[in-house]
Length: 433
Image (cartoon, rainbow, N blue to C red; front, side, top):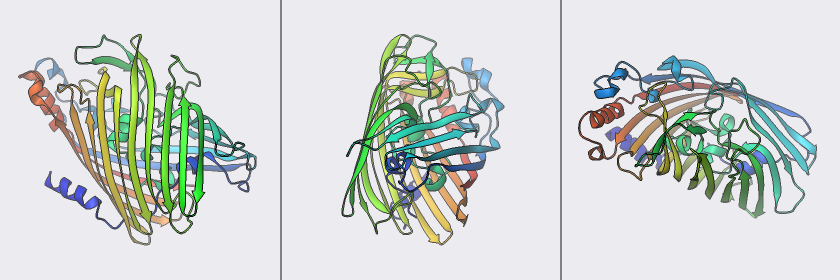
């Protein structure tokens, strides 16, 4: 524990390459002279190993799971294979972008054939299919399937600008939506069991967004307001009549007139998402919001974000073993944050450090769990479009209020499961064109 706190404290002090920009602009718009057809894509073969033992010592009804691995100790998305280590193509995406009418209408298409939350139930998924219109001054319009304007980890282009193999606990749990269907009544502590009905959202949704950016000298102000379905991303339509409304504001100071996916700047931003989900014939809130900052200049980077959620909180299998029903809090609360930084200490080498924490289901003491991880990373940029990323994650899970759980098997089992979470090491090659 002491080494985790020390590394987390150092994250704010590290001399940190520039990996930030206005993602609303980069992903939603095309330069008038960029052409009509521009193919692009990337591959991310990844090896993951989790230092974990099968669980032992469970009592009562949970004793049937002794000798199994808890789901967080299995390499996803195919956890039914019970692998604590696996080589797979984490992402394999190919797409096309370009102009339809230069300066007025452009498009963005991207498909995923790798193994991740998006393709958990289908081998190939369309992740982006949008058209942007640039006719109204101050109000560009984008329509289709694309990233919802929420947190920075949700918007970042992972192949060019994301320094880690895995997202933080908070972004993964609060922003990648896992569509579920109710299978039991809601308990007195606000939870119910559910079945998963599709893959994860990948931070995306079908909808329409009004957005733009405004420059004055070195300052840039940008906004986005999106209305979206809040449904499975493989479904173009809305299934329950409840639409999500998401807004994001960002203020940036741009250094040296830099631009593109690796722009040098200092930015602050805030976002809010409001929606409802039908669950067991009842509509429940799904609210997410956050604030964050980023500083990127030369070899230095530091960024952080705080986010929280209310209403529908999906917790995963309960108990956390393959084949068990998914636990959902319908009127719950959760919050999380991360602080990270990087330093390009040589021309082709970078060291990265991140501490993140996610407090799940904080409304009822019985349900509350705290996930935290410290990630130490090393990147080698050995070619202009190819890099190798090595991460080691010290992972921890705490039962925040053990006294709120009935003494005996229930409390002992909860503590045993928390203590069983293992550290994770991952090696990822990124190649893009």
